[in-house]
Every structure is written in C-alpha cells, then in structure tokens.
Length: 273
Ligand SMILES: Nc1ncnc2c1ncn2[C@@H]1O[C@H](COP(=O)(O)OP(=O)(O)O)[C@@H](O)[C@H]1O
Ligand SMILES: [Mg+2]
Image 1 (cartoon, rainbow, N blue to C red):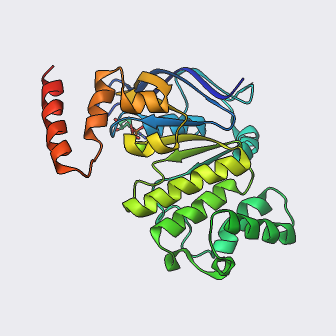
Image 2: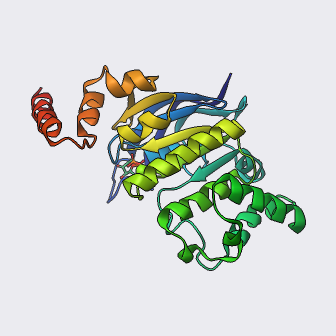
C-alpha cells in the first residue's frame, strides 16, 4: 500500500484582472510514494512542483482529485486533522536563510514542535540532542542563533526540525538548490543516511535531474502541470522516454566542456523537433 497517493489532482489559481479565467496549474496529477521510498519530482521552473508539495501539505486545495495518506483521504483535511497530520508529514524548504526564525536559538527552534506536541521540556532537550547528532551538528549548536551557521548547516537544522516529530513523509522542496555543489553532495548524503536510519519517505522536488538521480528510487517528470514520465530513477535519468525529459537531461550541468558542446548541439536539434 502506498503511504501517499495523489489521484487526478487538479489545482487552479484565480486569474488576474477583470473577468479573468482561473488558471489551472495542475491538470490531473497522479503519483504515489511508498513508505521509506524517495520519489524525485523534476521539472523546469513553473511546472507546478511546489504546488504539488503544497497540496500534500494542505496549503492549497485541489479543485478535483484525491490525496490519500496512510490509507486516509486527506484531500479536504482541515484544522485539527491537519495538526495531527503535521506529525507525519513534514517539509524542508529551499531557502535556509528565511526558513529559520532568526531570533530563536537552534535549541528552541528544534524543541518548539516537540513542546507543541506535548513533550516535557526535559524530554524535548534529550530529543533535540539526538536530532543534532543525527544531522551531524555539534551539541554546542544548541545555544547559538541561525546567523552563526553556514547555509549547509542551516539546512541541517531545518532537516532536524522536520525530523523532530518522527514523520513518515518529508516534502523536500529544492532543499539543496541554494547550496554550493560540495555542500549539496554532503546534504544529499545526509538525506540518504537519515532515510536508512529512520525509514522516512521523501517527496523530493528539484529542477535539477542530476540532484534527484542520486537520491531517488523513482523519478516523476512534470511538464506544465502534467506528469509526462515516471519510472525507476536510473532509467528515467539516463535513458528517458519522453522528449521533455531528454531535454532536461541535456540541460543538467556537466563539467566536461566538449561534452557540454555536444549536448548543446543535440539540445538545439531536439528543440527544433
Ligand atoms: N499562489 C499562487 N497564485 C497564483 N499562481 C500561482 C501561485 N503559486 C503558483 N502559481 C503559478 O503556478 C505555476 C506553478 O508554480 P510552482 O508550483 O511554484 O512551480 P515550480 O515549483 O515547478 O517552479 C506557475 O505558473 C506559478 O506562477
Ligand atoms: Mg518551486
């Protein structure tokens, strides 16, 4: 059974201007994520990746379709049910500089969700130490402020915060896109290690095929609000079926300038098709 299942999900935003038509940005998206699995979701900017994540988190309401989590229909979950779901479904955002409250210490940032859920402050402290250890931060991070940390370290704090309630699923929305390449690699390794230890599932959103390739079991490709291809990560990211995925693959950065030039040629030819 799937942990998360989206079926024919449509999302529209109000159109701009007088008598504007609603703008549908997801046109019937179906996907599923098994417990402990990573589904990579790729697509160019504006294709609707963040909207899918926000629909799962209950931050936008689908106009049609269903979202099921752990066997329950959560499409229209609100209020109390959403707060309960927040234990099981967590999120890590792209920007490590705005996602942490700048005036709270790392210790308080991590303890807050635990205390909201009824943990004693002593239990929360113990759990916070475990979390810091889990994400590879020193325990003296507790009393420090977010600004004392690098982008990569802040993203480790955000991951620790997401893990605090022992969720079953984390929606990761471009969680390494703001980091430099070597930091990206280390944070991606951390995601993999945490999954191995905790069995958490990820819906892992990125515009970059080379990022999802490393971390995903399966990859789904979104193009202008439609999924055009879903399959095992290796197959989708090395020999994709769909021309759009082929273009995304060719757009991924490569270090080798000769290869890069070749790819540019192929890309031009594909674009002309
Ligand atoms: N709150 C909103 N109001 C109106 N349009 C939105 C809103 N959020 C996203 N959109 C539009 O929906 C489309 C998909 O956006 P998004 O899901 O953020 O794409 P991605 O994350 O793949 O870059 C874009 O055209 C965007 O402009
Ligand atoms: Mg986005």
